[in-house]
Length: 309
Image 1 (cartoon, rainbow, N blue to C red):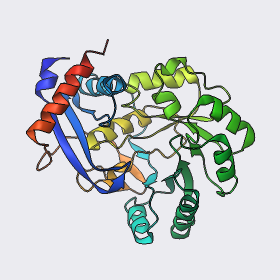
Image 2: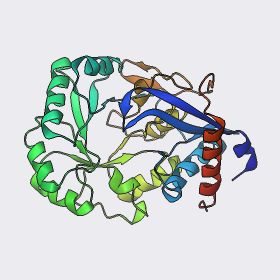
Image 3: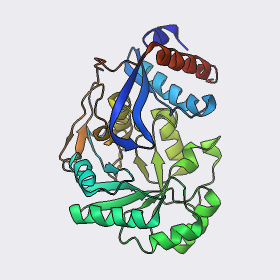
Image 4: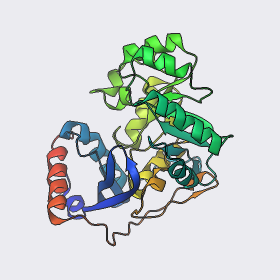
């Protein structure tokens, strides 16, 4: 890895408004190059091999010119954590101004999941609902839930394996989006998605950057939706650039997760359900991690960089 990039390293801790994905604080590492800032933020439990595409994406963002864009702003969905308190749900829903689509985390408790969806529909009766399961269901569990959930736009990664997804697709009419089945694969180009999913979820950092995400989309030849991996404003902005680099984008994208953070390195406001792509210059005031956490991230980057070609 270029030592000038490593010398620019800043590591920040971003507090969450509510616990999401089991975390209350999101740590991210940022590097600066000729073309701006890049983000390296694989979750703490990811090993170096799984983290390598994230570093490739960060380096690309910092050192490569941006692609041609077809729009200056991107429509986004709201993201609803697995919680059922009405006041909390209202607060989170209202933090996505003008958003018409909500992606709801489900999969851990059927009765609570159904109650959460009912509450969201009562708060926003005209909202489009999509659900994200993170591969937690068996085929039978998915079939039962999808037959009782009411109208939804799609279900994201209902089951863990391609074989399960193929079986489920035969049983239900609900559209299926593949996420982990692609980005968790050892070689995402060598995954046969035929008959398993309808749409492909692209997350720019876990997939190794914009160029590689486009190659994957072209290779699998499926309609795509772009989403985030709970990044800072720097990483979200790169996801917005990915979404805007597709001539056709027929879905609200999952790039509004900055609304779940109490503090961030920059502001990317949602206005009328859309976020405008920006030239993000991070503000680090009060966000830097401790010296030992900085060293942890620096060592992680150096180890991970050895895995890049």
